[in-house]
Image (cartoon, rainbow, N blue to C red; front, side):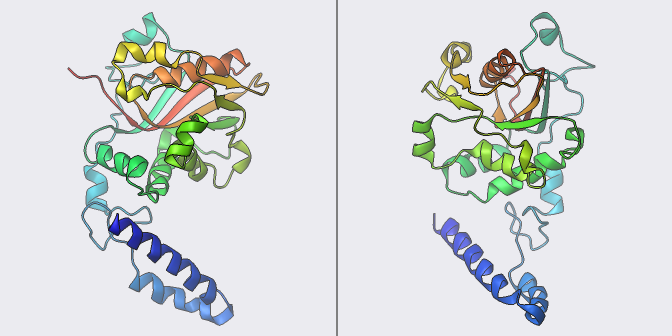
Length: 259
């Protein structure tokens, strides 16, 4: 908590200072402030952190999602669509994940969602945006980007929607594609993580409601972690009933099944 407060104070101070320095010739002093207040790596405190707060060594050591995975569900697959998706296709058409949900991504995600380290939304959002297979958000790859909705009660408890904050980074230069109003979470359910895997599908059934006509829309759903995919699949099913033609899941991390 103390560290988070220090970081927030530092950010606020930098914003005030930069606003002052932006006046004409004084903007040259930004070089000075960038040197003095240089970002340190979030994981090892190295002074060689990049713009998203991670140094090159830590970035390379992260549990990157393997390229040899099923393009539809994101689980391990020798080549092409996995047998599970062939025999029982999900309602979404593709999955793109940046990481496996393992250390230290799991710890970072917990800090982001429950530990008031809100600045990590930019780190996760930029990493997701940089993933090559997502392509450019400025082209016609998708029509809408919809963050996983939260029920108003959960949103009030947490204070922010982690998927929405990540989606804002993705659509920073293409804000028209961000849609967080067409779909609502109408059913307050127990957290999926608290339930056995088989109970998650039943728990999430009927949880979402679409308020707009989405006929012909190609949609990317943004979420932080994909575990069984039950929530994403229910949302995809609801979106397709509203007329959407293609649904992709873009997630920061994918949990692989335990062996």
